[in-house]
Image (cartoon, rainbow, N blue to C red; front, side, top):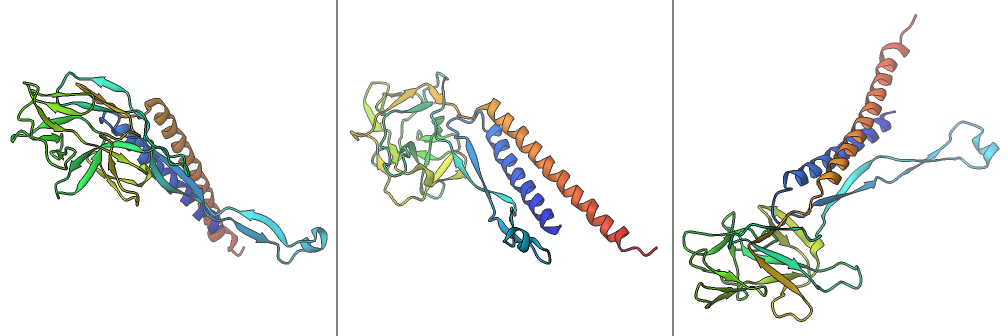
Length: 274
């Protein structure tokens, strides 16, 4: 009976974590460049049940009754890197990244991912799809959280002010059409190795090297100034999944309550002497 308590409890924990993930997706529905997360559930190993003290072996020729599941857990969250829709803002500091042709891993079928390269507060390289940039007090192009956007030489980009132009290839031009810098775009060979760190930043933990997509003949991309890439969260689908997770949680909760009542009766009634 206690095994049933553990199984129902594991189901409730898994659905609670799934609900938290879905709630985070909904909370970031208006975050530019946000990639929705998807969960994968996995069952604990099943147990083989044997019959003891019965004529089961004589009648059926085997002591095996069957398998018993021991619960489920949420194995991992994996981002969905599908391209989000574009939204026009008319802001010169908003630059949307459109992913076209990218290499595909022949073994896994996984497409590579294009990202902007930024420098975090510790001076480390991080990646983002959030192209809602701004210009700080010193004239540097930064993310909305103040992280410096880098060019193809790994340097910070000083645009002076908001009066600049970005070509579709990523060249940043001044008001008099002088080249300021080449906005770099990173080619992430294995996006499944990207780890979210918050504030739209991702860390790459993969073994294959990250290279620049600028001037890469195997890559086709386009930058759109005055646009942002919206999150790819599907609100209707996410709300449906949240309701499904809630119902599964409640079902496991009812099972848990039933076991609790059975244990209460076993303790308070079965052992009574009339």
